[in-house]
Image 1 (cartoon, protein in one colour):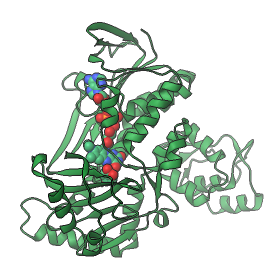
Image 2: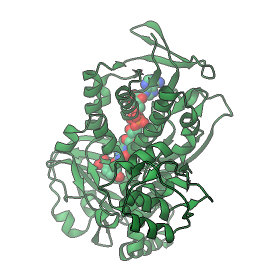
Image 3: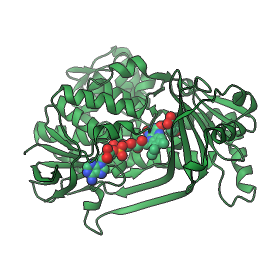
Image 4: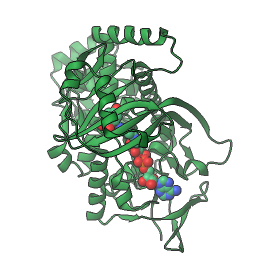
Length: 480
Ligand code: RFL
Ligand code: PHB
């Protein structure tokens, strides 16, 4: 068999990549080791950033998400017997998160791939990448005892933390960074009314708790336990009792208890592999990095990786431009490390730390007090929780700017600010001349500059001007 992009792994990263490539006219084949029922039985992430929900909508996978996903404008921190709401929406200029299970995202993506004739080969055994440093890499695998081979142009390893992709890097070509925490999360799913209409992250001297949800009558709860905890030692009764002991009294009093329909232990780990590519093999999602779930970033990072990788592939197939693929690892890693930092910070802030002689707990309490009393600190949390912006490339930046006339200059700036170090603009700008002149006067733009074809709005121009250093005599948008 032949395809353009061979994808290992039919989890959210692999499925989303395949779907994005498909709507851009690029062929792919997914090789998944498990059965579809197994993949759809895994209970994982619940909180989606706007970058992911926007991407899903753009590739025709947003209908059920829009009907059933719950948009949350806030999140709560419980500690010291009280609960403080962080106003995500207010602090970030209108950004929110959507509560919609990873299981549902995966189901929607499978349905979309099926409807569009996507090729997903499940129960593919012994998947092995070959010839990665040539222009004609391949994937071999076995299915029902028979050997097969897929010739492709590129291999995307979206095969999770234990996949074969990262193991295919020659020794010495990958540097890894890792932190394993001495605790895990024991999670249950139950058909009960959620504790609150928004998530509650709780810090308590007995350990961390999280009250989350999937639907109006489907709750997801986690309690911090030892990393090697025996799940069977936790009856439902013990779980509910421990959960309630760690929550403020008024919250605990409102918890509806019921039988668990799933119970599992999740170890906590921070991990990053660098770089994310070797020859024509690219790692995306958990294959390249892991975050502890405290910041709700794992699935969302998988989505931003896929965004950058698909951009690189779309440019390559559209115009032969390889620069996006060459820049993939670096672009993705910039965002990954920020999410690693945030997830590590949230973890250290909210969990009971081992060997704490009391000092660590006091410092945590002081930080929680400071955080919930400071607009600046809450804004930093909110910005990270809703998801940092993806970094657009120059052409997309222009497209985005030109299609963004209805967005406020504030939102545009927030979305685009970190992406460009400098601007060179060869096209021209429309807008109210006097405001333009004022903007130019207050910026470092050379007044002799001329604008030709009108392509972007005044607001977009303002965001360029306010966040750019202009090279003498010309303007260019240069990706940082
Ligand atoms: P996945 O989901 O692990 O999918 C990889 C797929 O590859 C297959 N595979 C192979 N296929 C062929 N050949 C091989 N050799 C293969 N080896 C593996 C696997 O069977 C699988 O189908 O990785 P992907 O696509 O990168 O997605 C990553 C996310 O699943 C993960 O980051 C999130 O679930 C993390 N996470 C959360 N992320 C969020 O963004 N928000 C959250 O609220 C959130 N909560 C969580 C989480 C993860 C959790 N657990 C259980 C780890 C809560 C929990 C409890
Ligand atoms: C979940 O609902 O499973 C969930 C929510 C938020 C997190 C982690 C997991 O930070």
